Length: 193
Image 1 (cartoon, rainbow, N blue to C red):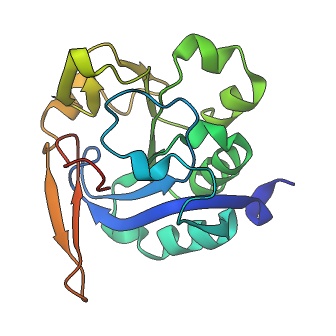
Image 2: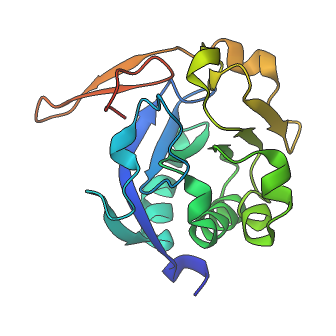
């Protein structure tokens, strides 16, 4: 199955964030990660079933596009987004075909692992920037969208440079209408998105 009807298991969606890339971005956390990097600050996103909901790519795309006038782009993270490559590829294709929103993908896979796997390579084909590599707690950096210093920027278009990422806030706290607090960014406390 491909295109807008592709199922996508999500952990969470934050409609607007300033701590997950340049400008105001919609952030989408995929549910499921088998990489299990020691020290990951978001282990709640790891179980494949988890607490997340299954939605279609089309539903998520419509939600994002409805707010496109207020967004610079979308950041896809997790869990591990590239463990659902068909959904990521379909979402990115839909978004880039219908808007000028940018796409950033945060992944634990290395560039070599992505390029060696046709499904993962297709998933990032429409991304502007991919931040690659396993999180390494001993090399904790927590800035510029890199949790650790071994993670690398893979600029797929000329839209963003490392300098664009240096000004991204390290932590953001959002308060929902029901008073729920959400901590996000590279300095988010363990267990929060």
